[in-house]
Image 1: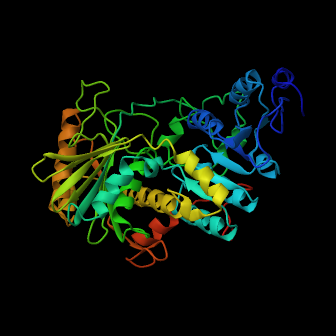
Image 2 (image 1 turned 90 degrees about the horizontal axis):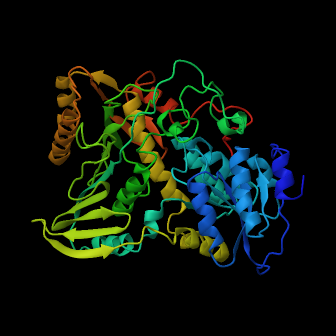
Image 3 (image 1 turned 120 degrees about the vertical axis):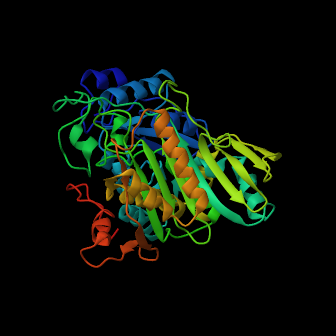
Amino acid sequence: MKGSLAAAAGIGLASSLTAKVRANVNGANNDIRVAIVGIRNKGEQHIDVFREIKGVRVVALCDVDKDILAERAKKFAERNEEISTYTDVRRVLDDKDIDAVVIATPNHWHSLITIWACQAGKDVYVEKPISHNIREGRKVVEAAGKYNRIVQAGTQNRSDEGLIPAMEYIHGGNLGKILYVQGLCYKRRKSIGKVDGPQPIPESVDYDLWTGPAPLGPLMRKNLHYDWHWVWPTGNGDIGNQGVHEMDVCLWALGKTELAPRVISFGGRFGYDDDGETPNTMFSFLDYKPVPIIFEVRGLPKDKNAGWAMDHYLGVRVGNIIRCENGYFAGGRGGGWIYDNDGNKIKRFPGDGGGTHQANFIEAVRSRKASDLRAPVLGGHLSAALCHMANISYRLGQKSTPERVREAVNEIPLEYAQKRWESVQEHLFLNWVDTAKTRVTVGPWLEMEPENERFIGEGEYGLARWANEMLTRDYRKPFVVPDKV
């Protein structure tokens, strides 16, 4: 169905709709034609950014919410720009006039759309995390290679003009050997509320398409949108939401190209009783040798009465600490500082937030060199998979007594990490969380075989078996990530 925006909006933008606003479009024949899939928050930002890149035209929008689709398309009409609209991403991939897709859907859709797009001959910019589970992330890597597609992960810290030279400074040995790296995700997350039964689906949303690969069950939370981050069928908690950015910087610092050999996680959903499932407080240790990763998630404020005010460590709330023999880096998106071991500032690396990340993707699309990407698909897979590993340990854990928690913490082979857990306990105390009553979940140590990306140990019926079942999911047909891409 083609016609004016007004006519299209008048009949409700049906799920198979391709509404085109006709206009004269300026641009060379070699413009990169981009479709944005998922256009609420981050997707809307991508629309604005890609429109401003020279030689790029945003030619299509896709969202399962026809009201959002109409709202975004209206802005194109007001600018007299041509746009096609779709509610089903498969129709986007059928469109031969689209060169690349930008994916900003909920997490559970990221890998499948990326694989489908590679199979359709389109390049991909996929938001973080690139996967909802470890297996499908590896399938994305395989698809990008098999079909020779350019696939950029949306971990834009890799493009931050402060973090790039800071990492070069550290890798150049200016602070000596790296001892450990730390990711901090102290970001306020309030309760999502609690419902007593299934909630209505917004009339504008095609819920079957929204659900896609996940189980098609009733909506058991107040808000369909965004709060999907905090339930396991569609989200990965804050370590896989905001935290994957900081995990990626940890991986960047280490220069690793495979998963950690061991992981353990502690935490819980503290301070309120709601429909969320993922932890709002989590502490994970990824046992790379000889340099481990320590990761902390805190969603509660710095104390019970602090409102939105959050903790910080060495001046960082959302960012990284890279500790070396002769000093450390503390910062995040937007750059940071190099300090000596006495805490004196040595050198500043001011950043810009990675605003050129999308432009870098377009440069690689033109060059056809994946090596030009700052956040290539393998790094995106590994960063997401490390978050998934931490979540799997947590999900296989048990609520434990304070004595058992202390025993498990003492098993971590780094005294500094043990001290950081003491800080977590103090944080919970200041939020009036009594861990003798509201107990901490202690996950098991899980051993990974990095070359095969499978857990090992404890026999066929041990923890490894259960952990390996969580490497993937039961997909809902026809939204299935295949074994052979």
